[in-house]
Every structure is written in structure tokens, then in C-alpha cells.
Length: 259
Image (tube, rainbow, N blue to C red):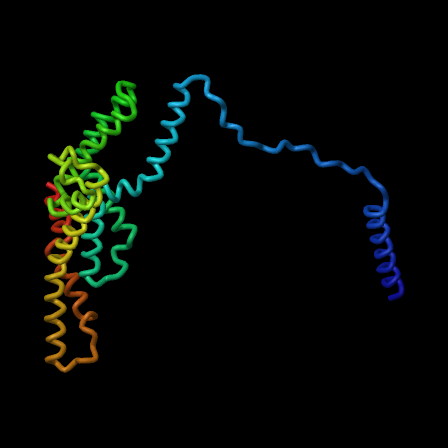
């Protein structure tokens, strides 16, 4: 027992001496190396006006890319397609089926499909000549806007277009469609798309509303007042939608509406 205590004390003494050697005795101190602080020095004076023009074109391109979501939403058929698909989900009575990612993805790819002729025309008339340095930036923008304007004019109602022309005070200066400014055409196109989408959504709601009314009246006649009609009508609405191949009908109606 005495030897065990002696060994423990001896071990503590050795540990104390070791730590004292590490912390109390002077040693060599190494300084941290001098690391250079990085800086951003990418703004340089231009040697010629051409370099300044290229810089401004790059800034313009970055600005357009930052506005790409708004351009996709407001210049294309994306708004109508997304609203109609959302109406389909709401009329079925399911809140998250299909998920938002599926609805937005389907609307995005349908937009690419519908706008493919317009994008192809922009590529041929504006983008490729600009990349080949056959036209300048302003002419490329004008050529790119022409197919988009033609598409928007076909989908815009005269009443909506006349509304913004009137409040822009351009009645006397607008003689044909080419005289309508783009900033007047865009809001007219958007409200026309919203009206068309809501009209299609109303037609989609009608058959499912009939099913809800039939189920509700049946439950009332059977005295089941405490049973929610939505719980019973939901399977019937899904069954009807599947039997008539609802997604095919909805997508076909959207494609026909843009002809």
C-alpha cells in the first residue's frame, strides 16, 4: 500500500517537472509569416474608345442577365401557363400535389416549347449577326424585340392596349402597331394574359364544382351533416381527372390558346 502511494506521488512529481519545462523555460518563438492582403484592382484606364465600349457592353449584358426572371415572366407565356396549372391544382382540392417545383418546372418547359419559334427567330436575326460583329448593340436589341413584340401583340386585347395608350397620352401619335412603345405594350400584354388565364381557370373549376355539389347534396339527404363533403368528393375528382386524361386536355388547351 505504501509502495503504491509512493509511486503515485512520484508520477505526479514527474508530470509537474515536465510541464514546468514546457511552459517556464524560455524557448524559440517563431513569428507568423507576413501574408499579403489581397486587393481588387480590376479597373484600369482604357487605351481606346473600343475598350470602353466593350466594358459598357459587358455591364449591359450583366444587367440583362439580372433581369432575366422578370423578362421570362413578363415577355413570354409563362404567366398564363403557371396560373392555369395552379388553377388545376386548386380545383382538385389538393394543396401541395403536384408540388410547386413540379408546377413551375412544367410551366418553364412549356414556355420554352411555346416560345421556341420566337427564340429561334431572335437567334437568327439578332444574336448570330451580333456575335459575328455584323450589327451593333442597338440594332441587335431592336431586332430581338421585334419577334417578342409580334408575339405579345397577338396575345394582347385591343381594349387593354387602348387603356395604356390612352393614359400614356399617345392617341395622336400611334397610327399603327409599330408606333406603340414597348413600355406601353408590356403591361397591356400582362393584364391580357391574366384575364385569359382566369377565364381558362373558371372553365376548369366547373366540373369539379359540380362534383362537390352532388356529393354535398347526397350527404345532406343521407343525414351525414358532420361529414365534410370535401373528404368524400376529393377521390371522385381525382378519379374523374385521371379518367379523362386531364393533364393532356389542360396542356392541349394551353397550346391551342397561343396559336
